[in-house]
Length: 182
Image 1 (cartoon, rainbow, N blue to C red):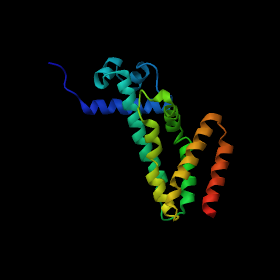
Image 2: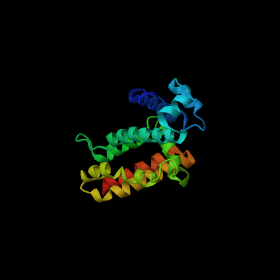
Image 3: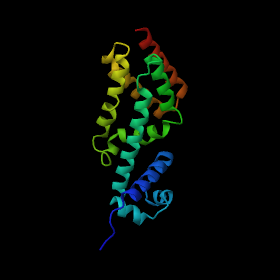
Image 4: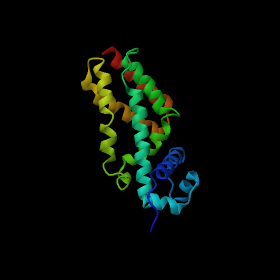
C-alpha cells in the first residue's frame, strides 16, 4: 500500500519552491527547487507529478501572492486621492517588493509561456481591471481603468526591456499629473 497524500507537506514544499523561484527565477532542473525546499527531486515529483506540474503550481502560487499584494496596493484609500495611491503602487510594483513578480511573469507574456499557463496573457490583463475601476470610480471616471492599465503595462514592459527606471518613472508621474488635472 502506497503513502497517502500529505497536503501540509505538499503546501510547505510549494511555498519553499515559490520563494526560491521568485528570488532566482524558474530553474531548468528540479535540483535547485529540491535543495531550496529541503527535500529530494523524487519527493517533488511524488507530490507534484512532473517538473512542469510543479512549475505550473509555483506560477499559480506566485500569481496568487502577486494578485493579493498588488490588489492591496491599488485599493481605494479614503485618506488619499487615487492618483497618490497609484503613485505609491507604482513605486512598490517597480521596486524591490514587486520586481520578483514582474520578472517571473514578464516572461509569460510571450507565447513561450503558453505551455505552462495557457491563457495567462488574458488573465494577467483582466485581473487588474476591478481594482483600477474602483479607484478610477473614486475620481468619477471608472471608464478610464483600461487606459490606466494599458499605461501601467506598457511602462512595465518598457522598464523590463530597457531598465531605464528614471525615464519610465518620470513618464508614469506625467501620466498621473494628466489624470489628476482631468
